[in-house]
Length: 219
Length: 190
Image 1: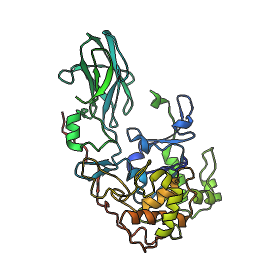
Image 2: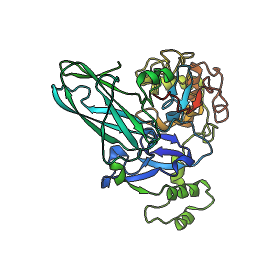
Image 3: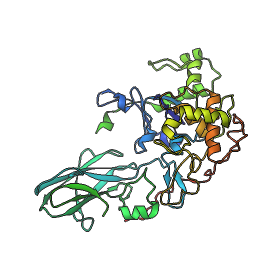
Image 4: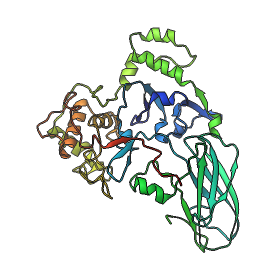
C-alpha cells in the first residue's frame, strides 16, 4: 500500500498491508483537538512502533499495489548502510531505546539531590524496566516507571540520586516485554558500523564534569 | 499518554474506498451510493487522476514523452544546479553524482549512481518533489531529460540514449543488488 501526503513534495512510503491492518490508525484529532498543522492536519497515518517517517502527515491517498514502489524515502533514505556496503531496507519497527532527559546535555547542575528522569520506548511492546548507571555502565540501579505504561508508547522513568560533585557518566538502558534489552554502543557498532543511523538505539551517555556541566560523550 | 486520546477512523473502511477506486469499473455515482460514512464525498475520477503520479519500480505510471541528455544538461543548469552544484557534486544540497565503490568504505558517498537501486525512483521523485520551490511543475519531457543527464553523468547510460517509458525501467542501476531485508535481531544480547 502506498501512503501519500499532500505536502508540496507529496511524500510517499510503501507499507506491507498485512502487517499494518491490525494497528494502523487514521488520526484526525489528538488530545481533544484537531491535529495541529505540524502534526499532519487534517489526517495522519499512524503506525504505532514504526519509523515516524512511515506515519504520513497530511495524508491524501492510500493506493494499493502489488509490490513496494521503491520511493526515494525507502531507497535513498531510511535504509541503513552496513560496513560491507550492503544496506538494510524496510526496517520498519523501532527497537527499544531510552534516554535520560534530566540531567542532560547543555544543563549545569549543582551537587546535592538530583532526580534522574527520562523516557523509554519500544516499537515491539511495553517497557518492562529501565536501569540507570551513574558510573559509565559498571553498576546499575532499577528506576521507577511512571504510569501509564502502554505498549509502543513513551514511558517515563525516574530515580532519586545525590550527586557529590565528582566527574560521572550517566546512562540508562531499558527492557521491553519481548525480553529485548537495549544494547550498548560498542556492541551495536560492532555489528552495524558507523554509517547505520536511522535505527540507532544504543545506550546513550551523559558526562557530568566537576563544574556541573552536562555533555554527550561516547565513553 | 496522548496515544489514548487519538480519535481514529477505521482503516478498513478507508481501504474499501481505495479498492473501489482501484477496481474502477464502477462510476463515481455508484461509489457514492455504495459507501456512505456520513463524511466527505467520493473523489472524482478527475481528482484521482491528478494525484495518481506515482511511478512503480516496474515503470508502471510513467507518462508518454521522452528526454535527452543534451536537454537535460541545460535544464539541470537552470533548475537544479543552484542547490546540487554545476556537476551534481558540489552541493550545498544532496550530492547526486559520483561515489562509485565507496559504500563499504569509512566515508561512503551515497548518490544516485552509487546507491539508488532503481532508475524509476528518479522520475517519480524529481517530478513529485523537485525543483524545491516548484515541485510537480516540470513536464514529462523535462523530467525524462534531467533523469537522462543524471544517469549519464553517473556513467550509467550512453550519451545517445533517449529516455522514455520503455527505456527508463530497463536501466540496470549499479547498486540494484545492494539492499537486504530486515535481519533483526542482529546485535548479540547483553
